[in-house]
Image (tube, rainbow, N blue to C red; front, side, top):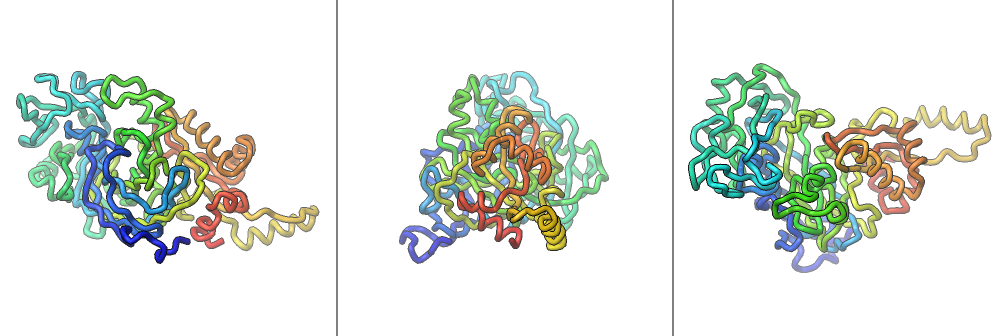
Length: 440
């Protein structure tokens, strides 16, 4: 455990974050902090997907916090992030399945929105009225919409933030008239609220809330649009015609897979992220009020919220991507820790058949990302094998009998979740996180 008495005089035990990037994660930009090793980060986050997606001046499709420098985090290390709290502050939001009208972008509507009338890329815009033509170019007055909602909804939340209800058209228009208030946009946010669109295609639907972070991780080692800091969305940058086009080799070298949309990245979970720049650059955003596995509509309920994290350096972390220790209730049935009754039954089998020792096991979830789900699975299996110093064939077997492959997001984010030998986790400095999380 880190000793705060050895912290630098300039580091702080807690850092409060209310500033956002221009949707691009740039390792050369100044970071906030530093926060001491073992310190706390408290952030007020802005909605992720839809608001930034309809705000052409934002260059990454999301709006995330400025990265925070973690004292003692060096390239090749990891940062363990204990998610202490996630609280939704939005009163309402809107979302839906999207399409991208032709002519409103330069290769990628998330990264390089343009006005087709005056041909301005990343134009400044303003709001006039409501609906899907309400975002207007400051230069020529044309409606600029790199994205449209094909089928969508406006949803408001109860005061306890436990359920939501989708609204009819008249109520959605009432909320649109005070969009920034109902979305609880942070003061420093630069996005247009998606509530201005006022979609209302499935009113009267009751929804459970189960908030989590769609973006949580560390800064990539080259400038990268925030929503593309993963193997699937990042694939859109490969050979792209805009300023952020890169090669596949650059993507694989520099990304940190901070954009996962994995619903288990929620309060109580522990996420371990790779460090690819000095100080790690922990950032967050894209809070979701809830989501089913796969985020199959492409988007879910993006909300503003407050987040509390505790960060700790893990020296000599062996992976280039994240590892997650979910809450026990979020584990697949076969990956849950064995009960004392199950262990007793196993010991009787061991005695009967002359097995000298039953290896201690602990749950772990290794993240894989790639352009599609099949390649993401291969990436996750290879990472798990490297982490635990075993063959991919052994990982396949363990994930089959003691775990599962889970889908975080289509098209290409997965979790390889299984019971791993605790001694193998100890060997890479992660065993105590498993013990903490699962009471082992």
